[in-house]
Every structure is written in structure tokens, then in C-alpha cells.
Image 1 (spheres, rainbow, N blue to C red):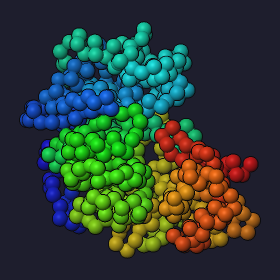
Image 2: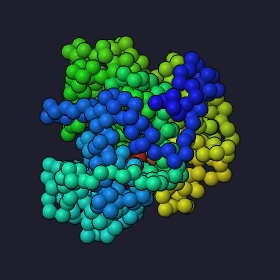
Image 3: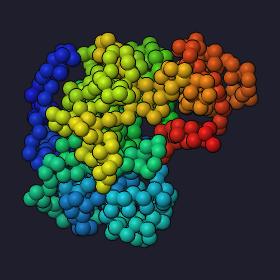
Length: 551
């Protein structure tokens, strides 16, 4: 399938990739028809989605199955009044009905809004009002259904609510009954054009309300580089990305690039993350490819890996935060596999990556994906030199790159603030080494300026995380009359160290940072807390810590 959309499918070097990687974009591209149904026509028995759960159930869906069920779902949604451009929110956790629904909505030409099951009534009301959501499809669990029902009186645009079970209380339509009674699906004459909005994510920032990131129908093609050349997938891959379907990482790793590459997508539907369970799944199902945030790998390497046969693993990738060198080295020593890092945002596909033909540098995000014209801009607007910090930007003066978002929906001012004069500003600061590898520093607003030095939070957090006392930490700057700002560490201690919180442990941690990284970066202020303030998506709200310190 990759051959259908790219002129060259294998590369020997980054130079070859830059020169020859080119995606062919069909007119009126629709992932449902041009990928899922195309596979079903060419190889109906090809494995598409292997769904398992923590109750011991498993179902292997072929492409013939996916065509059948997504057609039924599309026809059912049409009977509920859903058509082109209508907005539908999916709160489906890791239920296989998520794949039925999102692909079906693509076929109709509707706009999909994936959402996490952690949303409260207030969150749901905000999203329904901001996006004028017409229908909500939810997992039939008591807490989720209650929040949806509580939100409805303040969500006048919502006309239908659907439960996929097991519970389906009064007021909800029954998803599976709807599929059974759905009429034959008739493909719309013109489901979409390429620049229609296909997908929207409410992305939680560290300040303000979530932004509505809108992507057009070509967005899945932007993930060819993600699946084929970062995840390094092939037709026999069984790929697991650890992500809830409410987050953008799910379509990064559990849908678009993977199906275009022809991989079989492995889904583990579970309530509570347990490292041993993930390892057991790799062992039992012979998973060949894994993508997870560095935190997950940090938990995995703490297990007794000798209890599991991990020999099926061929390739492992990581993103979401920068990777600590110690985690990379430990994982490689135990498994023989390198962790290949990447970087991107909800607004983009993979923008920086460590590709198969490259030697990884642990902690580096890699090099630019040739889809994007990447630069680093200093505060005074210059292109940063090697070794100099700058904000990661995407230059768009020659055209919008495939995979870059369309707009912040219904917010022209916010769109212009981030994307103007032919430049999209990511808000992330990095530096580039002499080999062209990029290294994450932090969000632009989080960089600390102390005694003339610019200090990225990640540098100090990485150093602290190598101490056994530290479970989690957040680095911020606090005002200082002499230095401008000084580094503060807000730390959640490991259980065995909680009784030791005091001046001696503060000194021990400060000395540890001085040994691990440049001494001027050490935290002059340390506060021990029970938990860190976070957004609903798990991002640390450093702004909340800063605001508290400035009161």
C-alpha cells in the first residue's frame, strides 16, 4: 500500500531520504476507502487489528472484517442523522468500536473528535459548546455515561448519544443493536475534498482552555513517515503503541501509518497499566514492534525481563518526552535493541525522528523528517547556529507541509499567533549539534534565565530522575534579585525516601545534579510535594507552580 502513495519505499541514508522521499496525494483522498477498503479488495484475509483485553479476550480483525463493520457503522450513523461535516466525539478508551467508528466517520465525511474517558461533565460541556458537537459515542461504563448525561442539559448541539456497552441506559442508542439493524451502506457521492476538516483534537496546554487542532483529509498520508520509516514497519509487523484513543498518539501509532504500511495493529484494552502485563503480551503474542513514552520503558526495565521471551521484538521507538540516557542503555543491554526517538505535536505528524539508517544519540529527537522545512529561531529572529538554542519552527513559505494542521478551529487569532509570515512556531526550544541532531530543551515559556545562562527544565529533570529518591519532578524558575531567576525543583519522593525529606536530602540532591550535569544548573530551591499539578492529558503544569511561587 505504501507503494501507492510514495515514489520510493526504501532508503539507505538520510541524504537519500531527503532527496527522494515524496508522497503522492490523490484527489479526494479518504483513508476509509483508499486504504482500509483497498486492502479489503486486494487482500481480504490480511490481518488488520488484533484486539485483546485484560479479561483474556482477543479478536483478530481482517481487512474484510474492517470493511464490513465500518460500512455497517457508517450506515448506522447515517440513520442517526450524521453526515458530511457533522462533529462526533468518541469517548471509547481502547474498545475496538473506536476503529469501527473513526473509519466509518471518515467514510461519511464527518469530523471526528477523539476524547479521553477522563473528561468530567465540565470538560464535556466545554467541548460540545466550543465545537458544536452533534453526537457522542461512548464506552458504556457508569462514570463515563453519567458525565455525558450530566453534560447534556448544557450541550444543546448534541442530538444523539450512543453507548457501545456493556451498559446502555435510557436516553442512549445501543451501538451494536444499531449495527445489526443498519441498512446497506451507500457510499456518498462526494464524501470529502482534501482540504475538508476530518479530525479535531482538543489539546490541553499548560495554560488556558484546550485548543481545537483541526486536520484535513490528507493528514493520514502525513503519517507514512511515522509508520514506515520511524516505526520501521513492514507487512508482517505486529505493532503495539501504548496510548489511549483519546490522545493524538493513538492515530500516530494505532491507525494511519500502520495500516498504510500493512502492519497488524495490536491493541491491549486494559484499565490499569501494569508493566508485567505489557511484557506478557509481547511474550504471548510475539509482538514485533513497540512504541511507548520513555516513562513506560523506565517501568519495563525495572521488571525481571528474564521471565519473558522478548525475542520477537524487532524495533522499538519512543516519543512524548526526551529519553534519559540511562534508560536507553539499560534497555539496549537487556534486549539488544536501540530506542529510536522522535518528536512531533498534536498539530503535526512526526517532524523530527531517528530513522533506521541512523545511529541514535540517546536523548536526541533525531533529525528533520523531509516533509517539514525545520529551523531553529532565536529570540531575535535569527536562524540558530549549531549549539545555540532556538525555538523549533516549520517554514511554510513554500507551501503547507503534508501533516501540518489546518488551523485552530474557530480561533483565527490563536492560529495567527502560532502561524504567521510563512512560519509555524511550535513553542518548543531545542538546539542542534554539528551532526544535525536536535536536542530538546523545553517549552519556550519554561526556559529559565539565571545569571546570563539559559537553562532548560528537561536538563535538570533528567539529572534528578537518575537519583533513586525521585519519582517525579518539575523544574521551574523563581524570581531572584541577584540572578534574575534561580532553578527550583518540585519533587515527588519515592516511598522509601519520604521520611528523609529535609535539609540533608536537599543537599544530596543538589550535589547529585552538580555531578550529573553542569553545576550552574543545580536547583537552589527544592520543595517536596505529594503530587505535581497536571493537565487532564498528564502534562505537568509548571505555570501553576510558577504562579504559586509568585504570590
